[in-house]
Image 1 (cartoon, helix red, strand yellow):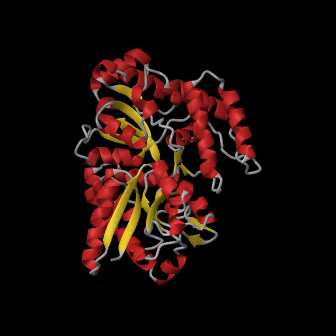
Image 2 (image 1 turned 135 degrees about the vertical axis):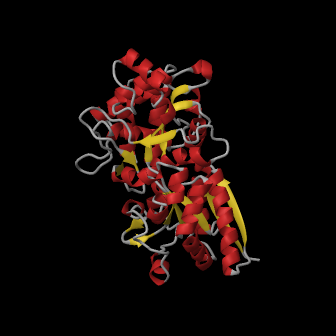
Image 3 (image 1 turned 30 degrees about the horizontal axis):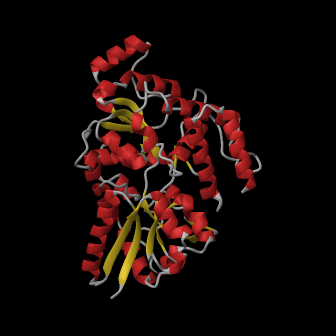
Length: 406
């Protein structure tokens, strides 16, 4: 009997969504095919799909890939070009149903290699109930001499985190995700760099990370992650999902994380902060602009799949407005403009309509097949900065040399 195998990013809302969508798809299309869904952590997902060539070998019909990996996947001929399918039988409202920033990263040389699954740029999550509390506001102004509002600069971020840090109540000023999985440490470094006017690319379009802005970025980041007067002590050991859950459990006043975890805080049963959360753009250095990061998850079809037509039919079904809204109600982030402005969803998650604003400031990572290897080097660089006393300048120069050898 035919069976569809899907490699899924391990996250309860993703898993429940895929299962529900597959059941509905089979029901509505009179399909009798079993689903084998395999949820995996980031490293395992990357290894099983790309390193071990699972997509080429036919191990997977469909896989969640994030946009960091897409150039490598295309370069290795691991995933199917979806353009012929789309030309014959496009997804509903394609492409105008999506914001342009969710369509271009999976397009390589004019060919489309994936459909948007889960989105949500990086932003500042904060506890609006605390920021609006008159007693907290009064105490903060007495201590720091200015009004308590979401931080506009990194100095304000650090001061506000120190103000709310109350370890005796198991409550901390901020939480980060520093587990070395090649993701959030890299993304946090990029955000610190961009909000100080820095760039990952030099004037020759080569990756260059040992600039003065990078030194400032790494100096600030290593200091705040290690600061027990501002930061949740588990930050060094948790990934973005666990950091999101930590915030949802009411253990931090602020978090720099994906929009999806703010949304999740409003819908999951274990959340203790429902109706107490707000999001805004990230702080930046004076005279520089805020920035966000646009990395998103895609549905892709394995080049070695023997069920490509069925897989594409499911992708089409899984990206309808109804399916996109279902993902959001499960705790993921729908990618369609219709979901962002859905009245019912905005009643449940009042800041949902702000996704469009975040996308206007969202930057992307360099598009090169080498990027996954570069992220490993940047990940190791940030961890070394957090765990040692070697100067940021030396660590950045050493990493730059390693990048140039790739």
